Image: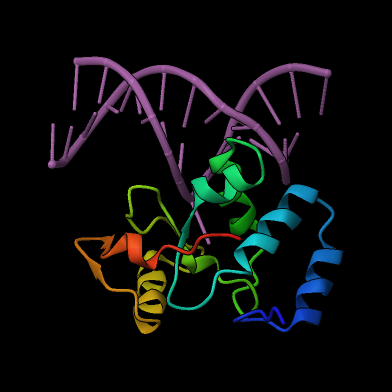
Length: 119
DNA sequence: GGAATGACATTTA
DNA sequence: CTAAATGCCATTC
């Protein structure tokens, strides 16, 4: 069974239902699938949605914050640097570190091994 | 409907 | 290699 690492399935459904933008819904759906201890990138998410709107992905995550349900801190930049976070980059680093993601010089270490591949 | 905005990415200096 | 400029595109105003 597919379970969501940081969010109850029903809760996610509610959030998605509440969201009127299909693009944002898709972003949330994908990001919610990233398990703890893994990361993805804005580019990968965008590509998965069949678009090149990397920025719009970050925007979607920035405006609506559901930190308790959607693990937006697991989305980093393509160059493996951390990227932004609505509650501050330091918080984002802290969260990642606590999940086993090592960070050095502002970048995710051992990135290739930590990268989550969408099925 | 058009302009501005941005948690990005790629190219160029 | 670092930094700036240029391109992207969905959302918002």
